[in-house]
Image 1 (tube, one colour):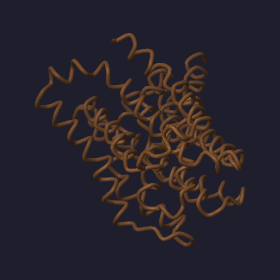
Image 2 (cartoon, helix red, strand yellow):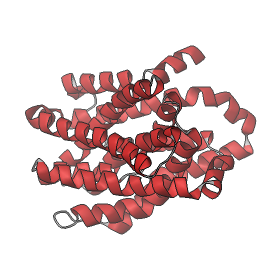
Image 3 (cartoon, rainbow, N blue to C red):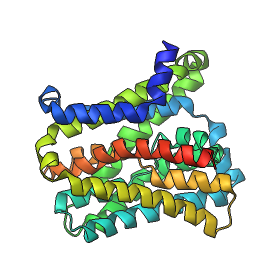
Image 4 (cartoon, helix red, strand yellow):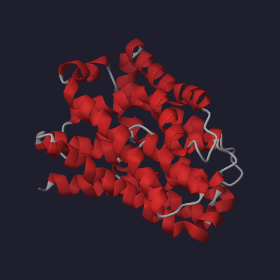
Length: 306
């Protein structure tokens, strides 16, 4: 069982890609699943993240605050502004532009720590950035979305704030509490968590693509290009930020991966909950979930072999 879970987590990119393609070819299989299921699946992923964290992981915030501040500032400036610029350059329609901006305004992705580890980056910095950006997300994600997309779309900042608290922060807190109360149980299940998270993310992607398969096939090439550019430029600009500040190679790699890999599942969840009038707003998050796992594996290989 452990070997199977190891393979599932190791080949997460392939699993998510396969789920996306199957959902595109056979959309009727998952089309009737309620969109609210996405929130529960994302909660499972964040609960698993909480089980793997401990208070020691956040010591870097106090020991090396400059590194974490630099990384989080890059996270919440580079990706949101890049999303807005790409939406304008490609003249995306209102719903797709909103989806791209939502992805850009979300915190770092849950897979970024694994990719940083594989890339021989600064893992402590990666974990610290993921934790801090996730804690900042209830405030910054709604405000940035409102600032960049609020003129054309009605953004309920307070409602989004509460959604992120319930879907992201609460499961992490529960995971931390469970780990504190039942450490032996947590230790036994830790080996299986990455696989369950991988399956949950694959299901989120499949549900979203199934619900929008027809529209995605009709005009999906442009949005795929935008998502790829968003991710690749984020990886490059994150690395350049570290280089301009004279950081070590390991820190540059960590910031590059943290900035480029977004919690795109959260973006899709927020689009489902708060922008039902714009169903295509869920698509960029789904595509990003597929692509950034592929690009993350490629970047980890490139960094590791430099």
